[in-house]
Amino acid sequence: MIPGIFASNQGIIGDRAGDFASAILKIDPQGSALMLALSSGMGKTSAKDTIFHWFEDVHQPGRGAIASGGTTTTIVVDDGTRYIPNMVLLVEETGEIVFVTASVGNSLTVQRGIGGTSIVSVTNVMHVQLIGNAHEEAAAMPTALTQQGAPRLNYTQIFRNSWAVSGTVKAVSFRTGDKVAKNKRDCALYHAEDMERSMIWGVKHVTQLNGKPFRMTDGILAQIRQYGGEVEAANTGGAGQWSRAAFDDFIRRVFNTNVKGQPNERIAIGGDNVLAQLNRMTYLDGTYQIGQGESVLGINVTKIVSAFGTLKLMTHPLMNENPTWQKELYVLHPGAIRRRMLRETFDEGYDKNGTRIDGRDADQGVMTTEFGVEVGAASTMGIATNITTAVKST
Image (tube, rainbow, N blue to C red; front, side, top):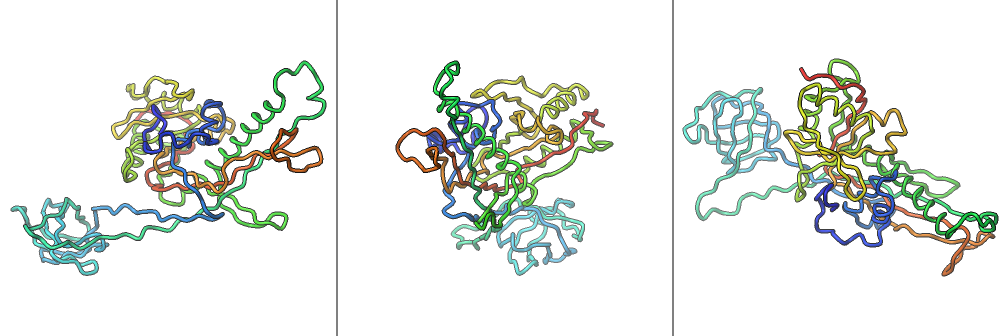
């Protein structure tokens, strides 16, 4: 975890020593690779191959739509696979409690009017909501519920950035300090920035380049869009307009589900324009729920408090360089994002003839990393776009 910013993945404290992302967090926390630096506190595992798979557990909701039932002891629902005997259900619209005694397909056999609640005819505009299960003394083992999960896949991407020190640079005397070390450091920062761009905005692609395999990884935003994240464009009364009420509703939907075993927290990254409009929203509505900015590990963090949860918002330098990204807000769950590493960052030195040098300093070289991005529980994350103008809530 990264204390002060997020608490997810608390069990990996100390697991990032020597990791390239942790080095970026230490040497350049206010630089252009914010997500890569923060990923030093997120999950990381090996990829094993250039293509990696995972199964995405799907949250089984307790709420279901009723298809038919009337006042009978058989209620037909939209999806009976989520209900088993001994479940206790509430009919939302009538307040009646029913007890499931059997389930075949989408048909539930139930006891009606549990606890003295009134039996009211149920129709296809009503819903049942799970409120628990109940068993008799010395009960037999209940039916097991299993879920296969949805298959996901992504690819690893090879990142390479070179550094070099020319003979002229080595010869001039007014450039003080270790010239090779400076060039390597500059190369590392460019390397981090390129990985940052792909982590956030990358798209999956497989082909050949120069007759050799070529792969690109799906970034965080692509996976949020594909796998059920909250995505909306600001439009409160007009395109680009966003009110505090619309923002709060967006946050409510993002916080509606959580990652199993992780704190229900979110971090958000955006452009300067987004923070300016969020501040303006609070003035227009007469509320002051944006906390004072603070510096955590060299990163400027602003707290945004809503009724549904607290966001830690950081403005991103790369988003400020693009007029479209300046108006976007990405709300992410740090407990659900992992880097899948095939090759950790390494540096190869070469001599002036291009021959690889092992075991000694060189005047030129290449930094290489190969990894992909895994985003689970996309429904816990969101993308808000075109946030141009703050307006008063109605």
